[in-house]
Length: 149
Image (cartoon, rainbow, N blue to C red; front, side, top):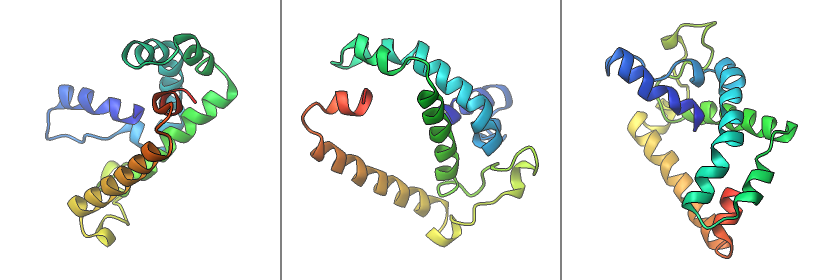
């Protein structure tokens, strides 16, 4: 979700007419700044926030979220997968920014899925089915399985 952190700031500083995806929605931005932000949030914020909201052991979350190479790789893969998944949801995504301008990387997938609204609906439906399947499969210790392990 870290790439989406730029959206409120872009809207605040440039209004709603400007692009709502930029640096963190590019492969380079997700791999660099996005990974650094993700690691910082995972280590500093996530354990406190999750243990305050959900019934999980704070020390266990803190242990799982301590700085490590696997955490960095997970954050990197999460950011890159977010960017690539957004290609299926939005008519444009600045995937190759700064090497190409914002609007030079239109999604090749969105038109094949019937346009931006249909593509977004299809992707959300697919993710909902996956979440419901996971929910049914992991109904015991659901929060621990989703948020800690």
